[in-house]
Structure formats: C-alpha cells, structure tokens
Image (tube, rainbow, N blue to C red; front, side, top):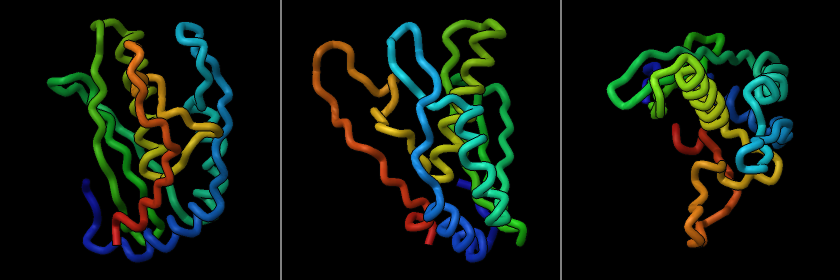
Amino acid sequence: MNKSESIKALAVALAKAQAEFKPAPKSSTNPHFKSRYTDLATLWEHCRPVLVANDLAIVQTFEPAEAGMAITTTLLHKSGEFIGGTLTMPIERQTPQAVGSAITYGRRYGMAAILGMVSDEDDDAEGATNRNGTATANGKPNARLVDDLL
C-alpha cells in the first residue's frame, strides 16, 4: 500500500463517506454464469456524489505486469493526503478484449475495496466460487478501511 505521510484528514473524510455509502445495486448480468453483479459505471454513479461531498477523488492507472495487468487505485483527499494499492489481474489471452476486461475488473474491484463498498446481496464474486461442489465461505464483506489505516 502506498500512502502519504499523514492520512488523518483522509481517514476522517473516508469514515464520513462510508457512513453514507449504501450497497451498490447489481445492475448487470453475466450471461455465462447467470449471475448478477455491479458494473463499473454503476459503482461510479453510486459513489461519485458521496466522494465529491467529502472532498475525495479516485485515480486509477494501469500498466502491464509479469502476471497480467497491474491496476493501481489511489484515493485522494483535498488536503493532498492519499492512500493507494495495486491489484494485478491475470490475462487469459493476449487480445484487446481480454486486456480491457482485466482492466475493467481490476478497476471495479480496486475501487470497491479502497472505499469499503459492497453490492446488494454480495456473493463474494463469481471468481471466488468453487465450482467443483465444495462449499465456500460466503459472508458479506464489511470493510471499514479506516480501521485498517489508523
């Protein structure tokens, strides 16, 4: 995790924002798995007004990595304080569509994680599902990122 020397003002703003966030609606359907999920546009639409009201912004960048595509998500506060982290998403095929998909997934997961946001009836994401019949833990995330930072 990257962060500024102090994150005091950012932590206060993020805590206020998290108090306002509601679970994001699952607005899209994955036709392959017949599952519903919150797409990137819906996540942005859902969190943007709360971020703006609390003087927060998100910047996301990406670059190739040995294991796939590295997506860096940085949460900024008007004070100049910041926190950020990088998630590397695997790329199954070297096609523009596969690269774009990895970037989009990484942006969505990175943004939800850094803000502590969840989807309605979160099912721990399709990728965490064990399809060979073994049950997996399926609890809703209750991320309070501020608790981890202080």
